[in-house]
Length: 560
Image (cartoon, rainbow, N blue to C red; front, side, top):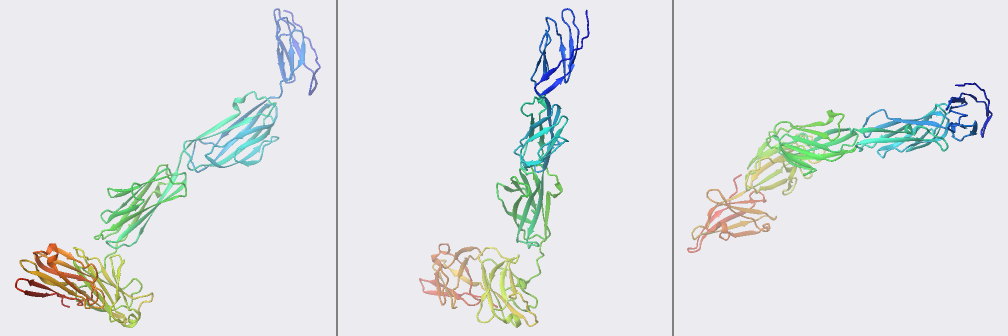
């Protein structure tokens, strides 16, 4: 082997560079050899001056053609290894919350770049997107923007531009949230490693909806036998949408009877003493209302408890507010004075005003009629229309208001119970009119009550006899009356109601044998009406057509 050292200085000229010296050391080996030449930013390895030498040997910005030391200018251009990273620092995300991505564009060289492009198109589920950017020394990027990032950056070797992209995840979003960003080199710059120019961040979405339940009851307290209404309100305090909810309400079945709900079936179903409602989706800040109607049992004597719960299809971060309870007090029925036939009450009303006043219980027998009169009012009660007289239910709802009775501040209630059962939960109320209560012991009134039902002890259509009923209205007002026909055993045989009220001074004549149920029957008759006590007159006449015999039976009032 022969070896020699030769120092050669080449003057190489490039289009945009001045001449630079290069030192080449070489050796030859029979059948081939190796040579290394280094200078500037490149290294050339190969065999030169041998018949089998290859070439050209490229080195930016020059090329060496082996064989006979031919050196020519090359055109490789600048290179820059650009890279981009992206992360939000988490693997899961909650819809409805804010999210920030950190996007870093970097340049590992060897060349600087101007006007590289960073592109990030946020997913549709990311709302209200804004971003900022900060560059390292000597590099540059836009300071801020909104929506997608489509930004031009300039990066020195070793430089970077850091973007912070912030948005709020759609509260209704589900599944996976994926966001991809990319970095593209400018025209004329070669990136030797394009695989690190883009990055994707993916988060599994975990919806969380804080549902809160509230319940209100009305009225409270409530009277036995009265209606009671519950209003249940579900609120979504977010941050995510609740895709569905189940509400359960359990009013005490021992104290109330379920009546209805809104929404009704099929959204809400009552079964096994519980109302279950399958409610729909609820956005953050939204409310859903369910109304439950029940009736308090007549025997209810303690507080009524309604426990309610709500559960959502999304994770609830605050379970403590998913239950609510209403406790409704039940009024203790006062020991009202009883009104009966012939009752006469005189008392002062010094402290009653508005909806207050004195209350009296009145039992109404089946198929009976009644009159209650308030009069003889004195003091402040004796002025104007006098005290108010009303028939009310156990909850205080007015069923009937009295009408004038004669002249002066006298009022009368006339009513009937046409049903086959007694009514025991209605009251008669006397109260002062207006907002100012009476102020003296002389503010008194008188209250009287009567059973106005008329009784005929006998009618007979048996054998050859027939009975005619005569009912006279001697008053100046029309009267409505109903006749009830009873068997000797007390069974109701027939009912007769005149098609029109009996006119003033009018007379009803009724041949009872013409009523199919009374043909061949006998028994008693009662007359229920809305005339004053003792105002109507009547009788039955039993006729024996074959002999001309007749027998009168007068209609009787209960004695005072």
